[in-house]
Image (cartoon, rainbow over all chains, first blue to last red; front, side, top):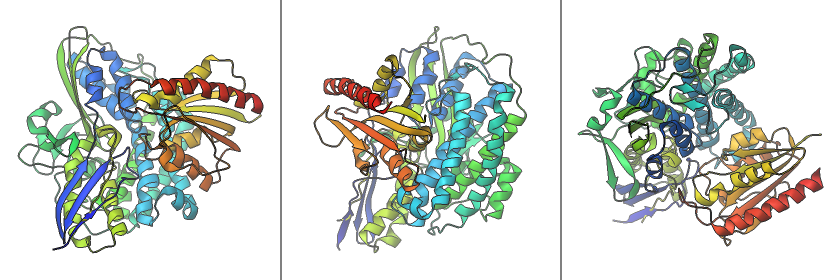
Length: 429
Length: 152
C-alpha cells in the first residue's frame, strides 16, 4: 500500500511557532505528532527565589496575548496561599480586566487568524483586499479590548497594575465615561459578528469530547469556580493534581496534560460555552440562539462562532461592571505573607490556566507550577487530526495541508504560552 | 506638526529579541525632541493603533534572516514589502511584518515608516544579549538619531 507523508514546515497563524507531523499509509493515519519545543520550563525556574509581589509582572511576560490570564491565576494562587480573598469592586475590576483580554485575544484570532481559513485566503492581508469592512471591524473590536486593558492594566500588553491583593491603583467612576460609550457601540458590532460567523461554511466534523472548564454558581467563569466536565468531573481547583497528570512525550518538549484514567480533554471557549451556557447574559444567549448555535457545540470548526458569542458576552459584562462600579477605598487588600501552598485556576481566552506556588514565611517563591491551556489541548488536537484526516486523504496535498492547519487553528493554540517555538510539519510518504 | 514616533519592539526574556526594547529605553534617556518613544511587545494590531496618527514611524526590532549576527537592516515600508519570515522569531502570529502589510492593504500606512532590524543570534528564553547585537544597537541608536534630525 502506498504511504504518504505530508510535510509543512510552518504552522502559520498560530501564536508562536510549532511543528506538526502527520504520517499516512493509504487512508490510514499512522502517526500524528504535535511537536512543541519548550525551553526547560524557563519561567517556573525563573520565579524561584523571587518575592511574591514580583510574580504578577513576571508571569505577564510569558505571553503578549494573554498576560492577564497568567496574572490572574498567579494572584489568586498566592492569595489562596496567604489566606486572603479579594471581593467586591476589586473582584469586579479583575473580571473587567479579563473582559478586555478575552475581547482582544478572541478578536485577534477570529478576524486576523481564523477568518481567512473560512473565506479562502492565505492570510488576513489578502483577505483585507476583498473584506475590508470585516477586517476593520475586527481591528475596532480589538482596540476596544485594548482600551479596557490600558485603563485598568496601565498599558495594552503586559499590564503592570495588577498586584497580589488587588491593584496598585484603581480608576474613579468618571474614568469610565468615554470607554462606556465605545463599549456600547462595540457591543452592537459584536452582536452582528455572531451572525456573520454563523454564516461561514463549516466542515462536518463532531467529536465526543470531554469538555473541562470552570463553573461558578452565578457567573460565566473568569476567575473562580469549580473545575467541571461533561463526563462527571467536579473538583475544587486545589485538587487539580489529584485528577490531572502532565507527561513528557517523546516527540514534544512540552508536557501533555491528561485527565487521569480518561485521557485527553478539551479546554477553551467551546468547553466554557457547553458547560456554562446558562450563565451567559440574556443578550449573549439570545444572539447565539438567533444565529442557530445550539446550547452545546461539538464541532471545533464552529469555535469561531463560540468565540464571537464570548466577545459579545465580554462587552455585555464589561458594561454591567462599569454601570455598577463604585471606586473602592483601597486599591488592594493587605497581604501578610506566610509559608504556604496555594493553587488557583482561571479562564484564559484559550481555556483553564492552573498555577500553584509554594512560598516561605517571607513570601519568597520556593516552587512554581504553571499549566497553560494549550498544553492541555495538545492531545485533543492530535486526536482531532486522526479523526479528521481519513475522509480527506484524497485531497491535493496543498488543500489537505491547509485543512490540517485549520483544524489546529480551531484551538487558537498559543504556542508562546505552552512553549516558545513551535514549527508545523506534516509529512505524506 | 504630525507626530514622529519611535517604537522599540521585543521580548525581554528572549535573548536578542529584547534589543528593540533596549534601544527604545536608551533613546528615552537622550534628548530627542518632538518624538514619542514607545516600547512594544510586537502585537500587530496594537502597533497599527500606535502609529495611526503618526506622520513618521521608526520601528526597531530583532530579526533573523540568515545574515550574520549584528547585521543592521534598514527597510523603507513605503518602498518595499516587508518579508513575513524576516520577523519569524516574534512570538506573535500577527506581528510586525503582518501589521505593516495589513496597514498597506487598508491604506493606513504612515507617510514614512522605517524599519531597523538587528540580526539576532540567540532567542532562547533567558539567554543574554549577544555581543554582536549590543554593538549593533549602539550603531542603530546613532543612525536613528540622525534620521530624526533629518526629519525634524
